[in-house]
Image (cartoon, rainbow, N blue to C red; front, side):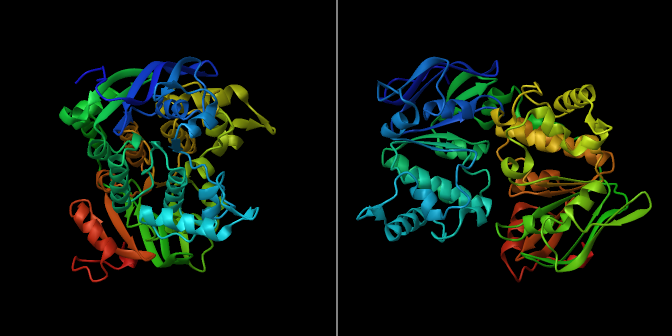
Length: 517
């Protein structure tokens, strides 16, 4: 393994000495990379390493402060127009779709087919249907994108990139919101594209995908190049150590320490809930317990937690929160927050953080009343609190004046999580808490969850990552068709049993009524 990539094959795209700053903070410093034509090349590193910034430089979205990019030995000058002309397409980590347009309109935007000077909507729908079929998903071309679940929006984003028939396809965390089956389908398509001569640049924190798809990897850390690796003779532990400076074994051992099985009183009681996508479901969670919610896409996991929190209207059922000898009815999200509930939503960019605001403003949101006096925000107190939270969640960089949209997805997730810590929540609900987060940050978030439970906080975790569910949960409720198909203790849970409960209606496994969860 070497820090120098062989020049035996022609380069599809090459970057030399790339540096980029935002508000005086170095996102990239003197990074060089050579990606051979017709290969799959991984860009890996911890959150904040500069991966997404480098991808945007390669795609012409950012102009580097120093250095240059060449495509087939020709300088890439002229921004996104030049990149598009060079056959470069980027699938963003942050969805770049228009929620009020249809699937077909989003896929064809910028390349809308016409007939006699008018938009040819029939052709547009046919193009969208063909591309979705190529991805193996059944999506109505006439559906409004904003009404689709996040998973299907991700497929629309990929179809939009494929519409350009790219020679170089850059994918930034394309599987963060996908199930294992959907991920395998996408990987199979990418392998086919590679065989057809398409050059693929791939970012993912799921290391299995990296090794399955890619032949080489470039490792970044804190905006600098660490090394180039040949993945044919590289181990997972070797790659993780290069990314974060610790072995995978060390990270896993640290995150599992001090796991407690002694739980307190029932904090959350949700009884016979009926809501959109939820059908007569009941859940109980105790103080100091992590309840994991598993199931396939569309099983009702996110719908259930949103109904519990009052974010979706309930037609039947009740939710109560009990602590310190008092029981509070949760009828709305406002009452949930008032009575000690914290929530990190699945889509952090639209619901979890305010992208155009600073880190400290985001961290202050749930605590504005405590930070104010006579209607005026106490600036010194705000700065002290924000600095403390940034240190607690290991935000990098720790500058709380930075605008959130300039941070990596993992750091944005830490902000969405960390801002609730000063409120001392009694119930913490996390929907896909580590989607798009590197292995180091994932272990850190798991540590934070365990610290909460050690203080007696009840936690609900929704996750498509079965390893995460098994690692974090003291008990797992598996949903199917909007209700609990069965529950598993930590001792009896494994990936096969979770999948079996989530897919079969006549599961022979001991399966408990939802009311007894």
